[in-house]
Length: 127
Image (cartoon, rainbow, N blue to C red; front, top):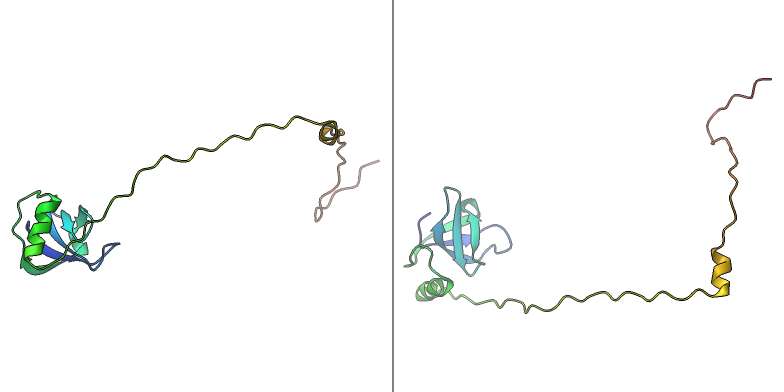
C-alpha cells in the first residue's frame, strides 16, 4: 500500500467508507484518514481503488480532506463529545436507631441440630 492510495474499508465500524493511506506503519498496518476515523488499520481490511490522492507522508486531516475534495469525495467532520464532570454519588446519612429497630436487630443464639442430609445413608450408632 502506497501513501495516497484511496481505499474502501471493508471491515469494522467504518465499513463501506472511503479513506486514504496516510502512512505505512509496517508490512501489515497503515494509518488511514478520510470518511473514516483516523487510525491504524490492517491492510486486509482495506480494498484499494485505482485512484490516488496527492498527499505527503503523515499529512494532517485538513490536507487529506482537501485532497479528497479534489477527487469528488465528500468528507464530513465529526465533532467530539463535550467533556462534562462525572456525577458523584451522594452518601446516604445513617438513620438514628429507634427502640423498635433495636428490638428487631437483636438475635437469639442459634442451636445447631445435626440432621442427616437427604440421600446419604448413615450407620446407626453402635451399642
